[in-house]
Image (cartoon, rainbow, N blue to C red; front, side, top):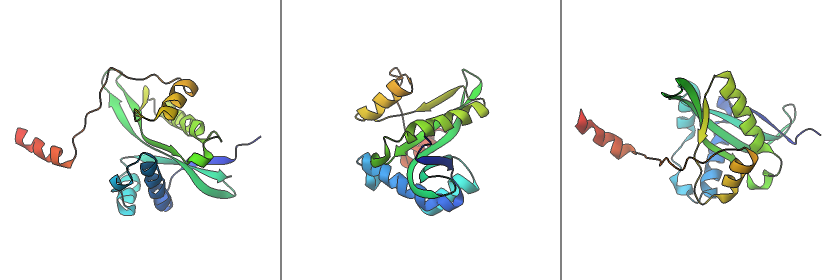
Length: 167
């Protein structure tokens, strides 16, 4: 039986859909007020100067498209140890009412194909510590391994600005 969804690369025409799925993800992660993305920023940074890319999952088929149900937003990085590019999954989201369809696995399948086409040595992502259903999915269904020896670090705009004092 064919899946009840299909996946395709996002286009400029999908900016509003991408933004809504980002808002849905932020709401799921209990931080809807943290979304500062706008249609203009997404258009510029995904399509005009593509710093990142997006895959979208929809109900239906490519010929009879239905509602958007999932998003994978990713970009490429580089590993000095492997000497090859990597694919970093910034966000993966499937609407809760569609999580039993296999869309999450299919989005990862498409990411794996892209990673292989680009000769990526790794596919990395982060998951919130409280998100046990996702952790279980990643470990049990995908065979992912936690990187417990690493701790994420971040500078936001003010911190980036303060780096000027070092030059």
